[in-house]
Image 1: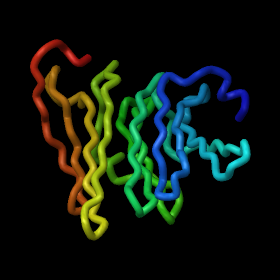
Image 2 (image 1 turned 180 degrees about the vertical axis):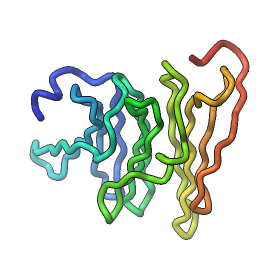
Image 3 (image 1 turned 60 degrees about the vertical axis):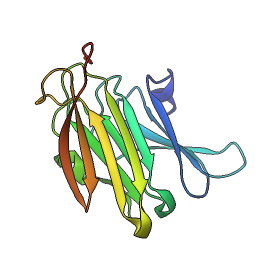
Amino acid sequence: MANNLLHAPKDTITVYDPQGIPHSFIQAEDQFIYEITKYNDRDDCHAVPLPGPKARPGTPIAAVALGNSGGIRVYYIGEDNRLYEMCIDSRGWYSGIGSSRFGYVAPGSDLLYAMARVKAGGHVHLKVGFQSANAPQNVITEATFWNEVWHNELVSISGNSIR
């Protein structure tokens, strides 16, 4: 794996779990997304590839931590130009249901963001923004997750092209 991380990645994102442990996500030269985590006070870091498909070269990466649950969600664009959701919780890493709901990203778009809010009772609300291949130009698709279901909404913006 050391040979896969020779160059600085285009995109890196770090989120912290409830114990304050950082979880950084990068795209390596083999095009997989890796989680880099430091579990102790020494210099020991662990780099583990996420079990999802390869990413598009230079993909943007978005990630959110889900409060005290310890869960993390990671979003990236695959080499097939689909938007993927990878999840980790007490069950380990798995593909989230968003992977089958988001669809394709507009060719060449690097727009990707994610937000999370954990409400009373542990109810999770997620929002993932991207430019869908099926949406008009200059329109952002926001996929929102509440009541255990993903919903897609179009958000118009004025001004210059976001491509």
